Length: 309
Image (cartoon, rainbow, N blue to C red; front, top):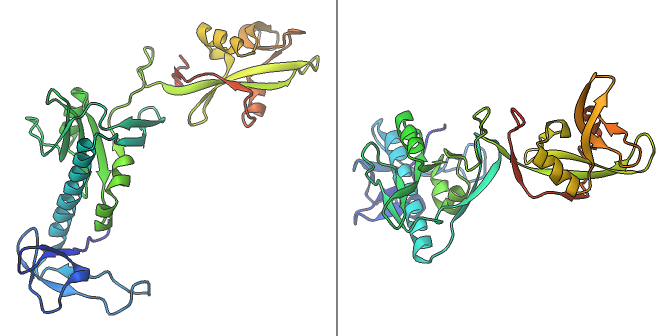
């Protein structure tokens, strides 16, 4: 991470001021440590090579620590005020994230249950930067602002054990303070996964749907519907691993999946089968149909793409 330059300071009236609005002969102090600051105004115009962003500078080595601390404080307050305004206006606050546990992309509403927001709410073992509370004053969601230090492992474990959703927002620069809405609606990490857990392997299932592709029977040339299951990140499962419920669902959509005996493999397995001549299509040949648009598709179901349960 590059050095964070401080664009804010207190003026003589103890009011927060941005570097672009300063007077060259003014007196400015650090909003964190109170030390006197000097101005660093680039003589090279913005956009040109070697231009460095205008900023306030400490006369000691404490500069970067104060910049990081104030960035954390300012961004946290901006997020808090934004959430509070949404609560007061009774608006939804939707967010989406790429789940690290199931690989699906999820969406949620921060204010589905929350009716209040608090800064550094005391949970006993930890104090999250921002806590969202329900009507019973129970914390349901926390937001942790990450500038340089991520939440401790024991803190994340506390959230996990108590089923508290934790959104981590990674903040790199003071420009992010003007982009709170986007940052909050696209958190960098979310600890909980809303998908069900597979009872066999213990991993999280993924959202998937059964797709029906129109083709022709390789033997008799008549119209044939084939089925396969596709996850949101384009992983595929073939009828061999379909449950009985999934077979019934695929067949209702027009496919014809049933048990067939393969002389080549000397075993029976479930496969897409022609309704006219009973020729069946093995899993290997389904790769040719991955990129074709489906004629029909089911509603989303949950499927484990590890053990295919």
